[in-house]
Amino acid sequence: MNFFAAQQRARVKTRRLIVLFIAAVLAIAAVIYLVIALALDGGAITGGGGGGGAGGVGGGTGAADLSRLWMPEVALWTLLGVSAVVGLGSLYKWSSLSAGGSAVANAMGGVRVTPRNAGPLEKRLLNVVEEMALASGVPVPAAYVLPHEPAINAFAAGLTTGDAVVAVSRGALEQLTRDELQAVVGHEFSHILNGDMRLNLKITAVVFGILMFTVVGRVLLEFGARGGRSRSKDGNAGAVMLAAGLGLLVLGWVGYFFGRVIQSAVSRQREFLADASSVQFTRNPQAMAGALQKILRAQNGSVLESPHATEFSHLFFATGVSGFLASLFATHPPLEARIRAVLGNREWGAGSGERGGSAAATPLTTGAGGAAQVGALGFAGRGSGTAGAAGFTAGSVSETGSGRAGDVHAAPSPAVSGTAAALPPHFPLSEAAREPSTAGGVLLDLLREPPPPAVAALDPAHRVPLAQISIGAIGALPPAEQDALVAEAQRLVDADGRVSVFEYALMRLLRWHVESVRDPRRAARVSMPSTSAFADACSVLLSFVTYAGRSRTLAPDAIFAAGAAALTGVARKPPALLPPAQCSFRRLDAALELLAHTPPLAKGAALNAVTAAAHADGEIHPDEDALLRVLAAALE
Image (cartoon, rainbow, N blue to C red):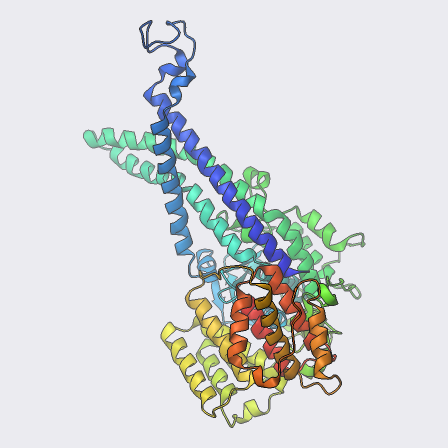
């Protein structure tokens, strides 16, 4: 699955969203204008209003004169007024979502899960979210539970990977097995990786703006009802408000229609992509099919009780609202269609929610040079050449049944356990890294020289994943504490007068995550760099990875050539291997900054090239792993 191609498609859908938004505004303005025009000159319909005088048309014959309904000045002011109301409403909603994914989770009544407040089922959720994040190379998103939702559902929300959250309902926690929960979380990670999250929040803001007339209508109805109880002039004003409120509510149905059309038009096909991506991540199509089948059988299905469910319906794993209009403008394909798409022609019986034999691996889509698009950071599963680097191989998953505490500490699925990202259960320091109050201490201990005994005993391959867990946790700290932590970490890096690849990677990931949490609305301006600039940036990245691997089986030229081959047909100017003396971290920063502003497909080509170089000798050195994660973070 090429996620950078999916991000490019998301950019195209953003343009489609703008077109639909303009169409909605024009439709609402047209309806309001027609009402105003009829109120100003109702005779246009009856043909009266002018008698047989000079100004009359039709001489009282009763023929309609629709031309009198055209009032350019009224039309212009109506369009401006509607645009202002809808635009301000959308801007207000976008501002309220500026906190990123946490704003959505809080609106839905979610409770953040931390090791301190987690029960057995919540710990299982934390483990699954952590596994998928480390394997994909993104910061560990905050995990939320919707405690008052008995249905089976989930969502991912955020503006960037740095402020993303993954939320699941109480019903999903209690009714899904560990494999099924991992499939659902994998589905949500697809939305994180392929650029859906920011688009989803844009849709939320746009739909809210379109529904502003309904909101104003409700306010007028409330004030009108109060004024209507009075027999004074206020009573007449109350009647006017009631009439206006009812009119705006009726008008609001036009906005509701377009809002639902926008939600369904942009959302439905992405669910098939996310299901396929989840199967690719977990290598377990039966688990995804089992989760979907349990929704079909569950008493509450996937319908959520939150009053905000309609507003965020396009974010959910499965349809979160019910009713005739919900089915007419469905934001998700039918569950049966999704199950058939996942399983193909495979037989699937009543017990399919559990693993029945080994699931066939779904082949990866490869890009230029044959580099696996998703295997870069672990989703390729076994055979990616990283298991040796991790020094850890998990055993088979032992399912103990839906919702039982016994499977909380089961080993990760094979797709995750065979990677450098995997951490063994009960890993030293991992609990401290997950807790916001102690995560900063873990980060600082990773930078100390000499290291504390617990850090000194770590396998080098576990240092970056442990740092990523800690960095994800500190997003819950107040800004002042985050700033103090960054300053102290930089002091430790500068203490010995030199910077290692690990120190560079940790500091860059830390600063990027803090900036993302602080200002999740920021978005890099996208522009295609010149041929020379793109090739130079790739040269720097490939040179760093070539020397970082310190391969004992391949010469640097061969490693670099493997990466450069992945750029064939993409970069018009071939990259060149730089001497070690020219590989400074300042040049690496500049290269990452340039690539962060390139279009998604160019980012994918760069990541493919670096991945191919890192995998050239069949193993991943911890420094190569660190550089890959920095690149993945920079490219979002």
